[in-house]
Image 1 (tube, rainbow, N blue to C red):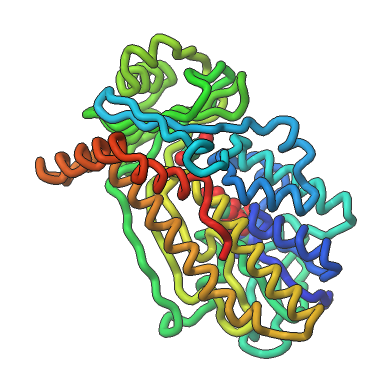
Image 2: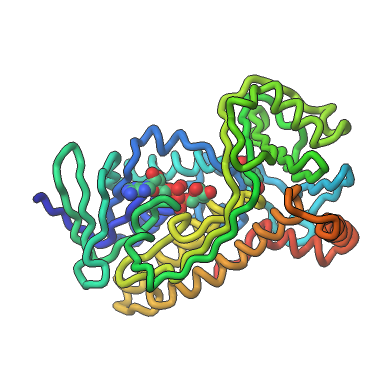
Amino acid sequence: MAVKSTQVAIIGSGPAGLMLAQLLHLSGVECIILERQTRSHVEGRIRAGVLEHGSVEALRDAGVADRLNLEGLVHDGVELAFEGDRHRICLKELTGKSVTVYGQTEVTRDLIEARLAAGGEIVFEAEDVTPVDVTSAQPKVKYTHNGQDLEVACDFIAGCDGFHGVSRKTIPENVRSEFERVYPFGWLGILAEVPPVADELIYANGDRGFALCSMRSTTRSRYYIQCPRDENLDDWPDDAIWDELALRIGPDTAANLTRGPSIEKSIAPLRSYVCEPMRYGNLFLAGDAAHIVPPTGAKGLNLAIADVRLLHRGFERWYRNNTADGLDTYSTSALARVWKAERFSWYLSTMMHQFPDHNPFERRMQRAEFDYVRSSQAASRAIAENYVGLPLD
Ligand code: APR
Ligand code: PHB
């Protein structure tokens, strides 16, 4: 069997794996990325598009922000709407910070380009990727590529292979704890080459369900509507989505809505999930491999970036300063931040959706929550500081 060797073997070339590879490259630490899918598949996935202040800084520090600096849309506010009542969360005024609208697809493309330009390796279409001997000082990752059985010998494995990856499952069940909430609905998303309905994002809750108006650029819009978990996409021709969206955002906003043919449509279920710990021996989990947030608040990509910044610090201290302290604290430090983002995503999801199982008391609680946020600068600031992103430590 052909054996390669490296310092860090990274499983998965989503934003977590790619960003970690870029940070390691800048620190002079060698790594190899093993990715199950093709490059075009990875670059074609459509996901959320809001970068926290700290994520933008991290991408800049990592030298991968040329296009982000040119094309990213800086947003100083975001709107919440409840049964037609509107409230702007003034991000900049309340926190001094903004968010940047820039698609995860673009972040992924920029990171892949940077890695390949630096001569770094990404093995696309790696099959049967399997971490081995992860609790030993010589862990390995076995895989098959072009019909050949291969192995990467390494010091550490970074499991950046998303929710359905193999890394988390390598941690024995008696070692890991899982925490989960599955929401009784999904989001039906539509992407279209039409100007956005408003300059800022709008999260709207009304009796027909949640809707989100987002964008990818000044000419490309991304909209979502809450739908049943088991909804069939075939039941939603474009016109039906536009009609439903217009009803949910209300006549004033809908008056500015431009419709157009969908470029992409998809349904995503909503889930909150955390796996503890995020380390097992010399295997470290980062990003969706360790946790999932519902998309309300767009924390998924941002959490992945925060995780790998912490993990990179741990590796850097190991290789430069010969100390394991950053690796030893990684799981605890990462989880402390993860849980806060879980709380915020759960909170915003809970306030902004129609829950089929809610009783009238719970509906009144949602209304009271919105009214409180609208009337209180402190409550609005709490939303704002979470939305622009909590500090890394
Ligand atoms: N072997 C190799 N690669 C794998 C395997 C496997 N067994 N399983 C999954 N992968 C790859 C996937 O094909 C994907 O490219 O791992 C990558 C994981 O990427 P993401 O799912 O994007 O996860 P992550 O990098 O943690 O980024 C988190 O992505 O899912 C969104 O909302 C989420 O925005 C968040 C971000
Ligand atoms: C998106 O643009 O896809 C998006 C924006 C904000 C969210 C979720 C998704 O909270």
